[in-house]
Length: 332
Image (cartoon, rainbow, N blue to C red; front, side, top):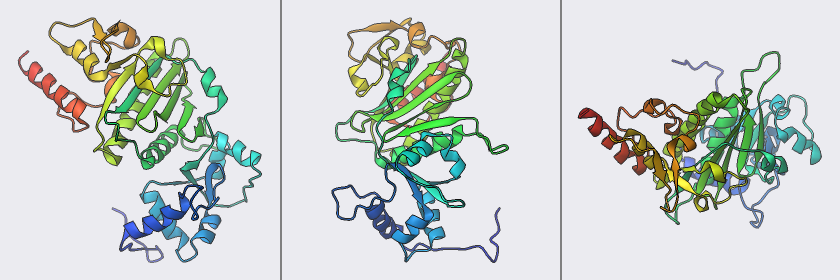
């Protein structure tokens, strides 16, 4: 339990909706709006002094705490910039870091396009969380929260002012290497209707890739449940033969429902093949999940760490599946 000290600042926000509307209306206004302010250039980095000039009537510490609690930004150490492409972008745009300056990172204000080097990566695994309704979209805040969590969970604790992992950001995605032979890419595609996850790995490091898949999918699902659980979605695996990047519309590739993949593994008469969502192709399970043991379903990376022993309130896709597995196992 934390105890407030006499010198600690305490604020009471009576109506966070009004404050959020006012702040968001300026910080995130499109360029065509009169309220738009070029406070962060293309980097997504905003200095606290710049924020103070923009909102002079608010205590900067209160404003920062509010924005961080809403998961719209994260305060970062200037050293963090040096292990990402953001430091380079700042230099290219004539930016200057002042010693001791407090900095905030707003993913939604980063407007750089996907780096060219991303297209040269050869990927071995692809998965996506796809909206099933044409009227449903992942809101900007979803990607704000997801990208910040992924980036900061990747960075190891600072030791002797050294961080051993790096991230590359662009306006709708991020990429990193985990230091164990695996490269990961997460991107919002298909007009914000799909979260794409792609993985690459060096030869001999497939076990590490399986672990990374489990962690990333778990984070994608976790943020979905917190940020926009009302969206109707389905989980899909992209055919390994169709992983040429970029993948702007995964649903146009050959994809397999995760529900169908798990059903094939767990059915009493185990199936060796899974049929694509369109019904015009099929693939062997060992091709789709080439690097995994299919004997331990509870440890399958596609579950993202979710347990099949209890009913999971994630989204409609899995509720029915998990119940079916529990019923089936109770009779075995």
